[in-house]
Image (cartoon, rainbow, N blue to C red):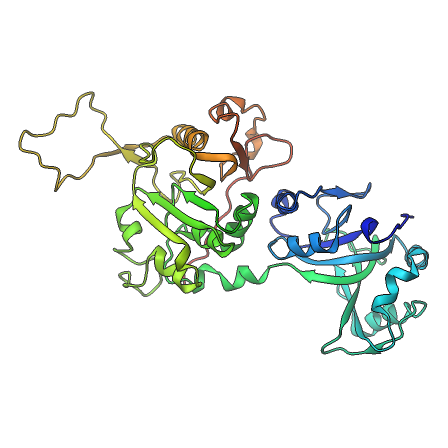
Length: 421
């Protein structure tokens, strides 16, 4: 059993959502690094498990992580755990009474919840499990509606819905500290937004990317393939100033055909600025411009704290840039430039990422992060992608939403946006 040595050595339990599993670890690590705290787990740590035990942290560290994470559901001060009810009882009895005492006072109120992963228990079975905790010195009054303290018994029945055991693989008990920000996925849903497109990034993935980029208040964040601005919306939620560019004139200006069902044309409030206004962050909107990502308009100085983007891949959105296949392009002698329509040409995927990494090398501040999606075909993953990474300068921190055993490739891009209502 673990040896407890006061507040500094307490363990904490994270209960994580069982979706976007590949992105949970880098998100939690990034959020801890914002406080310069380590990611220190138990010896039995399993990345795929929905329950993680963390140590070497304070309660303030845990609350800070939970105030931003969309992968985490809840957090607890871990009082005891085991693979059986007897082991759980022994672990709880070994937990120092002085650590429990502040939350078990006679003048306090409390309630105990039971949570089971991959199994549903009927109400009477939940009550039995709560009654089995009668050896704990609870002195307060039960209050199910508005208790001062909440405790939780959590049982892990594995992740195979076709092979659910009779008894849990692991049992945890602890004091609830804080919930994560899963509500953001619903409140920022693209279905509720004024301005969307056929490829608007899912709200949950947008917030995961912002967390991976360590976006914080007063940062300047840039998206060179801004589209309808979903990533700018997520970054502005954390207090960052946001800007971006895109080659699509109609999307940037919010004109043309609408993407919503039963709506033919976009309305006057369907633009990126209106989306930020909808969520109360318009003051953080710097600007978006029509620009070709292969020909950036910025002077070569470090300007951005983070670059967060979702480049086009030519599947659901076209990959194009301005230019011509002709060797020499000579404008007419009377050309004034006022009515010029640039010629577009193919923009190959390898060129997109080469330009993106070169741009990040010149424009990210020291310690800045680049977060982007990179499509792969899983059966043909190659882990040796160093030639692509060398395009970034040594001071640039390049981050991808990636698998654990590869340095640059990421999971195949998910279908990001549900069909508009």
